[in-house]
Image (cartoon, rainbow, N blue to C red; front, side):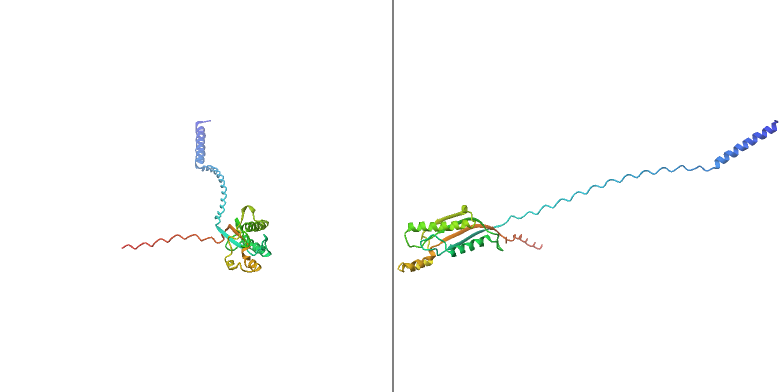
Length: 219
């Protein structure tokens, strides 16, 4: 091969290499792939709601008590006998029922003590009448126990003719015996006194605070 031909081949090879480099230089570079998105953080768990505290029950106000004192005279017992008449029993039944029944002002009465006192008229000796008055008191006491009253709270005694009904002072001893016995009938009796307490259903309203005096205007 002559030198001219070799030169041609070299020139052609150089030209081809230059063309290849130009093609590589003009080809746009491919963009780098975008990075994968970071994973979203898991949502934080919601805190459980705290249970609401139960409201404390309202404190009940202490009840206000009323002191109760009631008395009844069971008059007209048979002469020289320790017996209750039907009227005596009916009166005592009504009296006790009223104490045990609530009213608009109070609850039923809680009995603390009962005092039963027997009495007689003035006919006869003091010794005889003292024993008779005590027996009358016991009869009434026993009847009250049968009604449900605790015998431990019942106190009884006899007074004979020491506490006469005032109206019987007009009973003259000069009367015929039958008339005198009838005139003195109110003295043949048993007194029942009940002491207790009951819840007040109408307590006094709380006192309002005193109003503050108005401030004096500045001079």
